[in-house]
Amino acid sequence: MPSEAKIAGLGLGVLVLMAVFEIGPIHLDEYFQLIEFAQYQLGNTPASDLPWEFHEKMRPTIQVWMVVGIIKTLNFVHIEDPFTIALILRLISCLGFWAVVLAFNQLLGARCFKDEAFSKMFQVSTYFIWFVPWANAHFSSESFSAIFLLLGLYPLIRDPHDKRGLLWAGLCLGLSFLFRYQTGIAAAGTYLWLLLVARVPVARIAGSSLVFVAVTAVGVIVDSAFYGEWVFAPFNYLKLNLVDGKASSFGTEPWYYYVTHFSFSRPLIGIPLVILFARGLVLRRNHLFTWVIVPFVVVHSLIAHKEMRFLFPMIYPFIFVAFHGFHSFFENREFPGYQRVLTRVFLGANLLVILLVMINPHETESNYRHLYRNIDKGGGTVIGIGQDCYEMSGLSVSFYRPDGVTSMVVDDRAGLRELLEENRIDAAFVIHDRYDMGPDLDGYSVERSHSIYPEWLVRWKGAEWRESLESSTVFLIRRKSPPQGGGA
Image 1 (tube, one colour):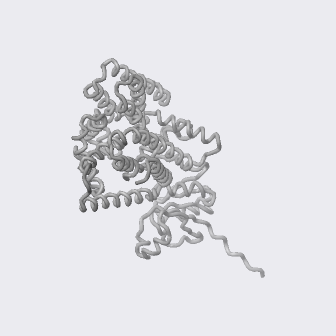
Image 2: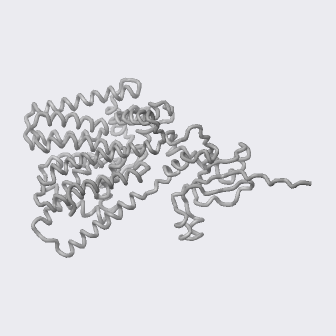
Image 3: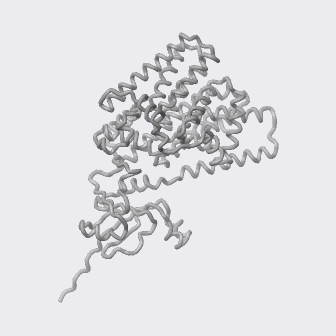
């Protein structure tokens, strides 16, 4: 088994690799409600192009202001490529998560698992279970709320009666709430644990709670500065999504969705983890992490609209509790043969999923990057067949759009040549939803400029697969030079 330092170093390496390859968001909220909100504040996009949440003044903006500051700083040192900026944002997120996990592992590893081998296995699980690097290599509200939630819980696990630790907890739990309002549920579970399990005096809990409230008040000022008027965004969020039922308009799921989806979407990994987690809850029912995660999951299960990303802030507590279930099965006993086989199957499936997630090509963002870095070859013109390529879910994309680009739309491929001729376009990039462009365009050369599918793979799969392949592909179209006339 590698040393703890090597485990942490390898964990950082996987997080960084995930940040490098994961160029697209897990959910479009990660882009539109952070990056495009920042673009508005920077004067690069009008309010009319922003999602409905902006006009309802319901989203927290502390992370938006972070993006604004980072972009301004990077622009000051002449870093303006949006894909480089996006990578730096993701690296900030994964480094923050890694640092917090490192601190927790040093605190909990030896304290909770006396056997060195189990302590190291626990640390390995906190870095390498597939959803850990995937979820935390994104610059999202979920990842930052998780970072500050863990920062708030750290001193309480070390010594829940320490006065400074309680004040620090109030500060970090308040910041976690400002990044994602749902972590207020975890904060409530934390304060209940302090009162009922740790038996911390009410006066000290009240002091920590006042810090939490003060941070929330600062959040009101921050949000009001962004929206241009006094707002209490948490109230707007609660009213619109829960009272008015706006969230349910995006789809509803049964109360048991989180358990079944997590278990069966990747059953070789999910089912064992759910079983171990259930056992761990019983064994560690008085641990702070249990009091944080149980109300968080229960409340989210009762809300009709559900997405797995909503539970991302609970990843580290979940692994901690689940590993206690694993530890209870195998402490002071040898692995029987069948259990060794099952463990290897779990590890093999986990490695495979990490690799598959890491090489996910993120088609749209991959196209954007190619266009941004090669736009001059297409004469600054991009044509989308069927839709504007600089739109996602009907919303305008400004961050990845090159300065001065002309974006045009043609209803179908049949009208492409007419559009080129009417606008006297000599060169342009065309985005088509198939790998092959189809019949030749009279008077124009057509070159496949970019695809997420490598040419060798397409050739290997054969002509029939190639012709039917539906994949957003970038083509470079150029007007052919007229033939040179001969002398008399």
